[in-house]
Image (cartoon, protein in one colour):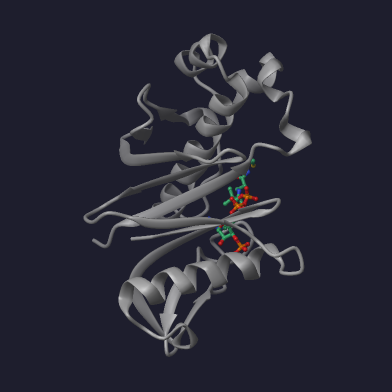
Length: 195
Ligand SMILES: CC(C)(COP(=O)(O)OP(=O)(O)OC[C@H]1O[C@@H](n2cnc3c(N)ncnc32)[C@H](O)[C@@H]1OP(=O)(O)O)[C@@H](O)C(=O)NCCC(=O)NCCS
């Protein structure tokens, strides 16, 4: 079975999320008991809370590919203390969490191979979805030695998913590549991961 990858970037400077670490009901809705304790004991609870959230959402994007239509219940995704694994019931995924000054990015997945990923600030005139696809195409073109113009990202219509669209796939000259892709965007940041 082909591996799957999921990613999520969070804009840590977004004023809408600045105080969430102090809202105990929100923290308890997102985190399990051990994660709540970790946030409470942290020197930087804001960054830790959103790192956990990003890890859970990255995990969700993988589980959603394995079980189309599943709902996102962040609390059911458990992140280990070292932030190297995220588990959902019996499904255990590897996890990489990377920190930028203004963002945190998580990649989760299963299967062989090392994921490749990128986070960048989008040009304000370019929409989030377009910028994330452009980043994924550039990353894939560089890794695969293909011309960017021959690559594209698409999402097929699929009624099993909540927005009636399947997770994104990477195409080369219109043919689906055996490369799993994940996109994410938040405010000024766009990100992608490939496996
Ligand atoms: C997948 C989801 C969690 C992403 O949320 P988000 O924080 O708004 O967005 P992000 O920027 O991190 O990621 C969006 C990208 O994820 C990808 N994506 C969307 N649905 C996906 C899925 N089911 N699996 C994997 N990737 C998915 C898309 O490429 C999307 O970007 P695009 O719209 O530009 O194509 C959200 O769209 C979703 O489907 N939530 C489920 C709703 C739910 O279960 N609610 C629970 C209460 S009932």
